Structures are given as structure tokens and as C-alpha cells.
Length: 225
Image (tube, rainbow, N blue to C red; front, side, top):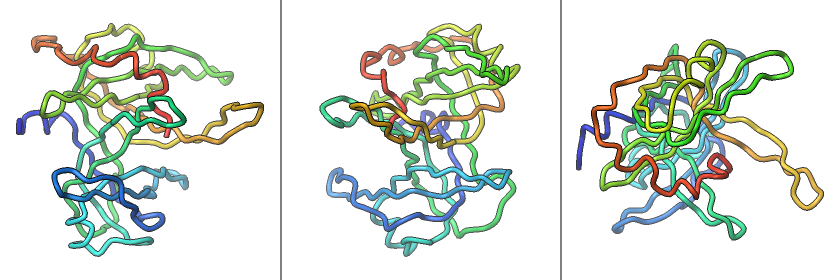
């Protein structure tokens, strides 16, 4: 395993488990479970973040509905067939659990990767400037995670000047956002997950960009869960 790659995707979250953990999948005889973690924002609001965890960590830490935890891991993506269409599912993969403790910043992410779609800049009806970007973050075993990010204000104006293939390091928090989508003449509430950016650094592209353009055609609905 390339441990340098693990450093380009770092997440820390602290919160409360919502609902009982459910079986997700099995890899080489190891079972993995998923649950939602309720994480407070600086305001009175909160984010509901999908989490995946090994059965061993789940049992060793006696985690269930209502349990509180702090943990370290990575923000990951994977493709899943839903209603006959390939969707990119996002989850925080925790690999280290710590006892819960109130902290100043319960939701932190730092990633380094490459822009794999042109930035989308827009202005809200309230004149707030926003840029949406998609970052490909290399992972071990020649895999990549495709992570949607959103920038605001001066960061949005900066990001809109970036190009596909640019290498960046960004920090922020993982946020959940509900929206409505019209399906068969009915409005359906869905949840989007993205990285809300507070710091962005454009790096020199001195590495080979091997995976930025991989499976771009599968990313149309990249943040739907």
C-alpha cells in the first residue's frame, strides 16, 4: 500500500450515530457496515454524513444507534447501480475510532487531487457567488475518488479560473444538503454531499495525471445518494 496516497485524503469527524448500522458489503472476508453520522456545524444546524466502517471497529467500540464517536478516515466514492443508472456514492470510510469528546472543529477534511471537470460558476438570487468543482483524488491500487466541492465568494472567483488537470490542495468540511428533483411528475427529496471549501491552494503539476480523466462519463449524477 502507498501510504503517501493516504495523506492526500484526510477526514476527521465527531458526531452521533443515527439509526442502527447496516451491513454494506464484504471484501476478502471482512464485513463492512454503514450508518449516518449527525455532525454539528458552528451554527445550530448540522450535517448528516454517510459513514462506512469495518465490522471489527464496530464491535470493538460497541457502536449502535445514539452512540457518539470521533474518528479519522477518508472521503471516498464508488459507483452503484440505482434504478438502472450508475450513480457515484459518497461515504466517509473510517479507519480509526476515538472516544467522543466535544471539539472546536468536529468536521474537517483535507484533500489533494486534480480537477476533472471544468468549474461551474454561478450567482444566487441573493448575489452570492458560488463555484462547483469535482476533484479526483488518487487512492491505492490505481483507484481514484471523485469528490464534489463547492467554493464561495472570493474562493469561488478564484476557482472559476482553474482548468481541468490542475492540481490543488483544499480544506473544509463535508456537508449534506437536501434538494428536490422532479421524477415522473412528482417532487422527490434527495440529499447531496459535497466538500464546502474554506482554503484552496493551486499546486505545480509536477506529477503524472494518470487517473483524472478515468470514467468521467459516469460522473453526471456524481453527488446523488
